[in-house]
Length: 346
Length: 196
Image (cartoon, rainbow over all chains, first blue to last red; front, side, top):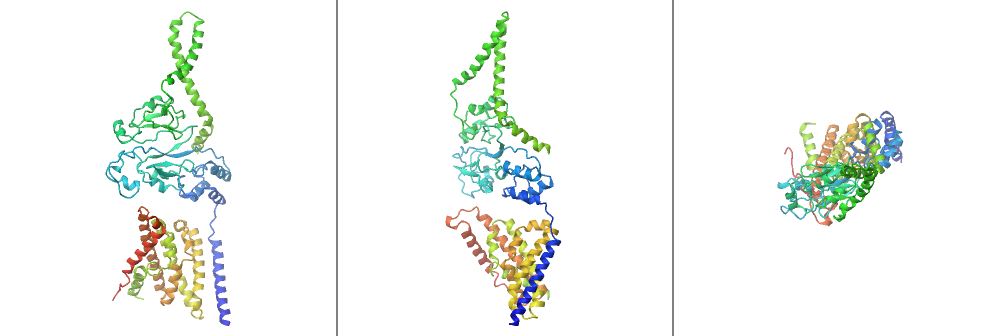
């Protein structure tokens, strides 16, 4: 019996000693942490995706408290989180421009292959092979799901041989952008009401593209010529949209002979061609109708004024188109502009 | 306490009596955190660290407190108490003085609190009647054996991720089969005799 009590006593004393040491250590080794840091870490999504450029959510929280990171850098959390963080830090949040990952390949070249691939189902492995993988198109999606594996939000999937982004789930963390060995995925800002995309990455010349794909960009530059804001430029036989200029009008999608350019993710139905010239003719007819009246008042050099008047009318029409574009942009330009300015102010 | 004896203990702990593959201690973290070589090496290092320290701390407690008072039967519970408080203490100490190491070991340190490999190493130290130096060597090399095993296993599992296998074998079943095969290969060391 004494042995049991003795054993209990020894154990109790040891426990008490260790407890005292730990209590003492907790005081001595206490690390002072800014309570704001924990508060911020709590409202972050906690996926540690690294989209903000800091090592994990805790790293970002520490950087915000240290003042080296903006409060709206969390792409995954979006505006809701940045507002919360701003509240904790006591600063204005600024607006975040919504971004999404976009795969620049439609997968229409999936039926054209150079050889039968039977290796590891991984784009990185396949792209190291001679010819850069089994796909005939050197710029197409290999469809082996390397992006799918790295996505922390389950937002990108290979569907029918091509990677497709789930817009509801994508948080623009750019993990897939870094993972794609063919660099097909890029983040695009969704500023305009309708988002126009050229989902192709092929820098090959037209005849080559037509052999390996049913709708790849052939570099005809029709879209670049049609664009009212000169937002599309040709980069080595590939049309590219400058999203600072794009107003989302979708005229380029109408012009594309390959049916490649998408508006809000779908290729728009082509308006029948003949009525098209007629439609712009209507405002043209209205404007000159007034112009000659003004010209007729002086009456004398009407014959000379006539061509000038049409020129003016043409200009007026162009201006009208531009204004319409501005109007579309104006609807959401206010948040977009302040969002741009916020990081600059840093 | 010659070099020969220590070397024998070290090789025994790393290869011949590897904690995972021949003693089946510490299987839980071995299966749990071996999905990538990064986390596996982090866990392995943390275990090595704690095993060495636990051996060093438990030896004097056994030698000066338990044995003289005839309380050897309380070994297990005392060791659990010692290890748990030791890990807590190390965690606090690292957080203050070595934040980089603390973040590197991260969540693995608290996980080790109840790791059976750590308890196993201190119990075996007592059973084998090791002295202080031998105990520490056995602890550290046992941890290195754990590190070797978990790193090898994680490397294999990383490759397996890309392989096509029957649906029923995906994930843990295949990992268990792999662990079995690795253990079989470590059986090859069991007949090894060091220094005749």
